Image (tube, rainbow, N blue to C red; front, side, top):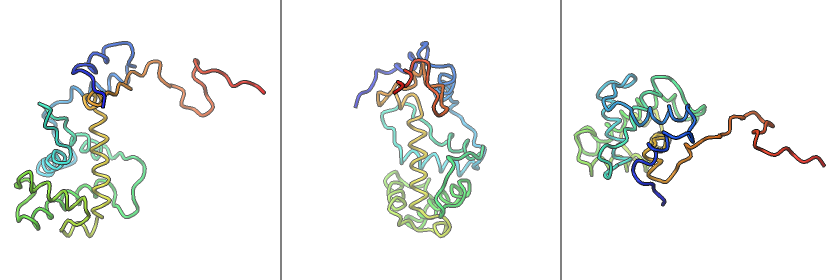
Length: 199
C-alpha cells in the first residue's frame, strides 16, 4: 500500500489543485473540535457509540484517533440517509437506538456487565457475537443484528475514509479535484472533452 509522508494532505489543501468546496469540507474534518457535544444521542449512549466504534476501528498508531461517532450523531440529528434501507430494518434513528441498546444487552448476557465496563478483549467478544449474528438480547427481535452490524460497519468505514488523514494513510489524493467534473448532467461534456466524431 502506498502512503504519503505526514503533512501531505494539509500541504495539498493549500494549493490551487483543490476546489474551494472540497477544501472547506476536508478542512472541517481536519479541524473538527475534540469535544463534540452529541445532539441525537444522550451522553451515555454517545459514549457507548464511541467505545464500540473504537473497537471496530482501532487506531493504535494514531496519537489522536479519528473520531467516527460525531458524523453518525450529526447524520441522525439531521435525519439524512443514503436513500435506501433493508426492508427488515427500522428507520435509521430507531435502528441505532435498538442496535446500541442491543450491544449492551449482549454484554450483560455474556459478561453480566454493560459494554463500557468490559475489557477490550470482552468488548471484542461481544462485537464478534454481533458480527456473527449470535448476540443475545431482546432488542434483536426488533432489529436484525446481521443487517444492523453491516450498516453500522459500512457507516463507520465511510466516515473513516472520508477523513483526510485516512486518505493520506492509503495514498489517496483524489481531493486534488481541479479541474474537476462540474458537468454532471447526462450527455453534457466537460470543455476539455472531445466532441463525438460524426459518422
